[in-house]
Length: 253
Image 1 (tube, rainbow, N blue to C red):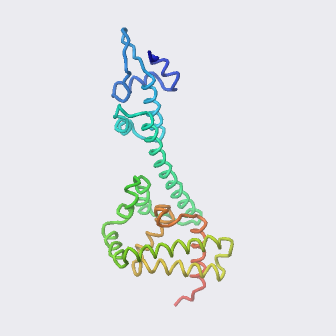
Image 2 (image 1 turned 90 degrees about the vertical axis):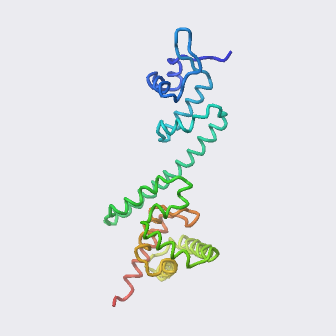
Image 3 (image 1 turned 135 degrees about the vertical axis):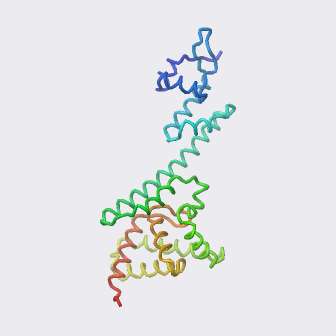
């Protein structure tokens, strides 16, 4: 006969209060498999396994309503529960990484005594909460409808093959910049890399300075998927300084 645990034992084993267990029972999130003749709650090993899953999901920041949805299939095998947990944890890691990159970007802007407009934060922060499926279409959530329409117009100016070639050139340039991080951004090498960087930007955005500015903000904040462009704080800092040196060295009309 499988061992059965009363609520006090479960509380002690799992580090959760009896009050919380009663609440989970009341809301239908975790009902004990049995009741004793005196109406005591009796939990089985399967119940404890399900509770462990609930505790883990709660630790990852999911609401009880969402947890209820994720765990409502009572027939789920323990391996499936673990696989679900791994998948959700992987998604959470990605979200935390993106949040970290955004905070680094904001910190860097403040270090430069550059004020970050609230409008920028208004567009950046919701992107942090996108699911992996939504992330593939992050531009729809980041740009306004008119900006997105303008972006779509620019996108149609190249074929799919042309864009793949364009992204390949970006990745090659990124590696060249990465290989020269030890050099002075104001040197001839740094200014050459800045010129090549700006040329690729201009090739995509032409005479749309607003889209160009927002795309650069999105990249610095870590919103652009790494499948499109690797994210490297050192490269961002180097290019920013190289472009500044290039602009300072360019005679003003």
